[in-house]
Image (cartoon, rainbow, N blue to C red):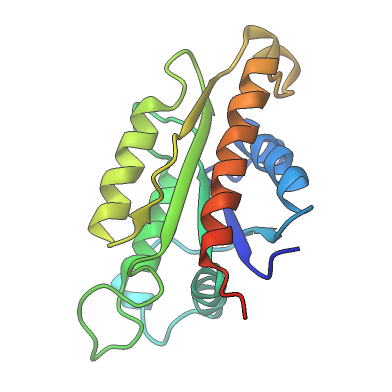
Length: 191
């Protein structure tokens, strides 16, 4: 097992969201090789400068998990062509200064390697992935040079609330995961 950690961030708080199911599918594969965690941020308050300092405990905990991760993998639904409000809220908190007297991009996001996938309707999360790239770029995160995967949800998925991945979907996702593992392997320093 490689001594690296991937933090999986799902852009939906729904318990059985399609993107959470997607993250679990990837997590089951990745856990053979690296440590993973799906970030729980359902208790994160809406960003508001009135409550920014002193920093809420949940924000401190999320920043620490983000900072300790070697790579972040986002799983984004698409809401009107963009990322969800809850994911944008999380990113807004992460983009803020850690102390009142600091300015600029915090170290928790600066040069943080990221990749992304998404499950949505017929547009396959293309809009939200593009939007997430724009937001993460403003936060100085670095997209890894591997293909993102967008999944078109089938009508059956919407009827059953179960992610119905085709063999092609699975292969594309596993290829993304393997490319990520190759990237991570290059980060490991061997004696």
